[in-house]
Amino acid sequence: MEEIRNPSQVLNFLRLPVKIDYQVIETYLRKKLTGEYISKTDKDGNVSNYAEIHSIALEKSYKEGYDIAVQVKFKTLTTIFKNKEGLIELYAALELDKTEQQLRVLDFKLNGTSTNWLFNNAIASIANTFMHDKIKNKMKFDLRSEIEKKLPVINEKMEDPMEVSNGIYISGNLQSFLVEAIQFEESHMLVFVDFEGAIGVDVKKLNF
Image 1 (cartoon, rainbow, N blue to C red):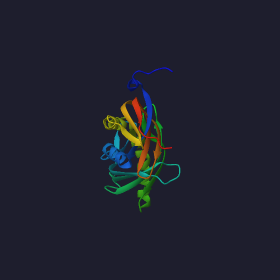
Image 2 (cartoon, rainbow, N blue to C red):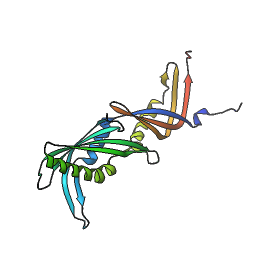
Image 3 (spheres, rainbow, N blue to C red):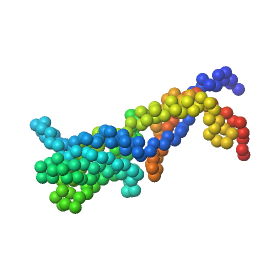
Image 4 (cartoon, rainbow, N blue to C red):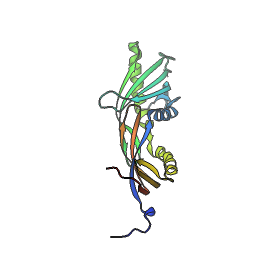
């Protein structure tokens, strides 16, 4: 049998589920989108501002085929509907870009709500403009940066053997990672990450 003299230097893999609350993504989107103008640029380069985004709310979607539901509140800036408040409901199906390690919009459905028929049509126009000019460009969640924040915390905990099951401990240092899959739960996402590093398992008790 081949002998490994220094097991602590052998790189191996560990898959861990990383929990990311929807509130984390909501905060991320608010920073990127609140105060943004919903606008359109004509062929001459003139920009027309239709509305200003005031707030973003996000939760799990219960519509079949969609992963999350996003509510976008805005205030209109047009002459006809000056300072009227509107709401766009966005249902989005998301995909994982493993190369870029980003979570982004694959498909979507939009609803605009108001009691005024003419204003509803204006909302529909604003929603479409908003979707194409803002959402697909800005509604990307950089998983790499979030996981990188977790690495020092995990490594600090793994400096001393960490019990993962009754009588079974792991220790070591995680060096690199790759997001492999995402699962959408009630209040959070579970991001399954493959970590590479020098990881050891210490079995102190066996229960069969």
